[in-house]
Amino acid sequence: MVTTGGVDVRLVREHPTEAIVRLYRTAGWWLDHYDQAHIPPMVHGSFAFVVAIDEESGATIGMGRCLSDGASDAYIQDVVVDPDFRGRGIGRRIVASLLDACRAAGILWIGVIAEPEAVAFYERTGFLSLPGHVALRYSAED
Image (tube, rainbow, N blue to C red; front, top):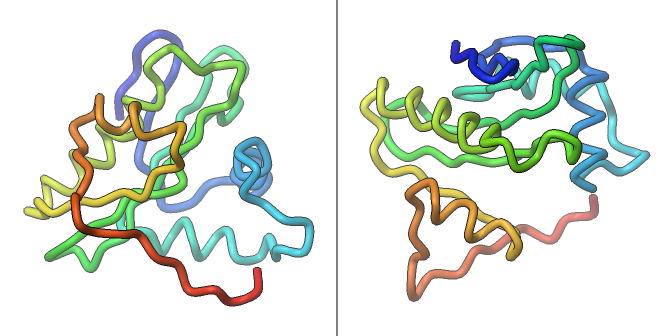
């Protein structure tokens, strides 16, 4: 757990569904037909799930998660900070916590697929592009 600047950044195995859905909506990653029942197993099933809590209001203002088998590769995804709290280093702290969890398990190959506007953010946290590689997504209906 890291607490500075009135924001508590911590690893969790469970967290209120409504807070997670609100952050997904803020990022534009939640569609109305998605099932909120998937949130608790998603949080619990992630290799690492980090939330940022505003200590004054108690509100969940950021999150991020990491998927991994716990032994080899890991992938960071779903990093989002509430727009009212951006620019304060909270996203960097979320990513740092996820990286710490990976390194503590001996996982050194850690990837992320970034939206174009987030590339510079991830580069500042130590990620480099992989020339000659292209991110792909299965095109099932959302």
